Image 1 (cartoon, one colour):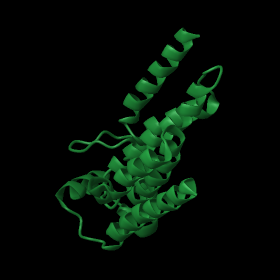
Image 2: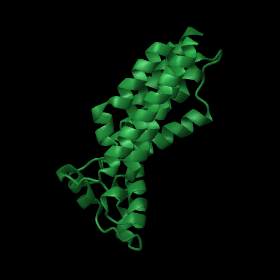
Image 3: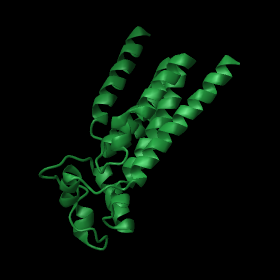
Length: 199
């Protein structure tokens, strides 16, 4: 009965986290200066121009964003132009996915009550909510950190820990979309090395 009650609270906390992020996105506030700098670096929004797509692999002068994040942004700009809702849609998706992945990861690793607390911290984090409606790659960084850990944990816990194709592929995709994922992958790789030595 207690586990069922905790499960319901967990679902409520996850739903609240998703609602907070959607609400922050729906407010559709004007772009602020840091968002405008990134927007200016991306150049023309017309998807028919070569310059639009060349931005994916060109270094930026004032901003840092992984090629995958720029690619997703340029695709969305091709659909919605430079409207705030189009520029911030990818961060919203990444932010919502972070809440779901956090719930999946923490319920695997922690006791129910502790997992509920940890998921509540992620769901109600004002910084997490804010950057889920901000035209910057930070929500993607959080999502890929949770994704890589979620994939690594069961493989590390297996009788023969190894990095399989799914984890390799997720790692390559993560680095393409989120530059800080390199640090997460370094930690995951070190954990596999330690697990291998123990065997």
